Image (tube, rainbow, N blue to C red):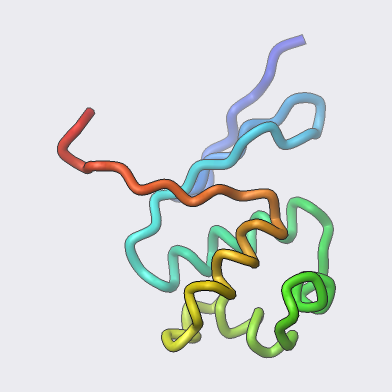
Length: 97
C-alpha cells in the first residue's frame, strides 16, 4: 500500500491509511500559525474546548489563536498548544535549501 500526500495551501499532511504521520507548515504570520494549529486539532478530532482544557486556556483564547487574532498570546501558551497537539516548532534558515 502506498502513502498519499495531500496538499492544502501551505500545509502538507502525510497520510498512511488515514493516520497522520507528519505535518509541515510554513508559519510567518499569526493567521498561518492559527491555521496550522486548527488543522492539527481537527485532524486529531479534538474540539477547541478539549484543547483549551489540555493547556489551561479558555475556548475563546483557542478560537482567537486559531483565527490569528490573538496577537497578544503568551508564547508559552502557544508552545503548550503545539505540545498538546504533538507538534514541534522548528526555526530554520530560509537561505539554506
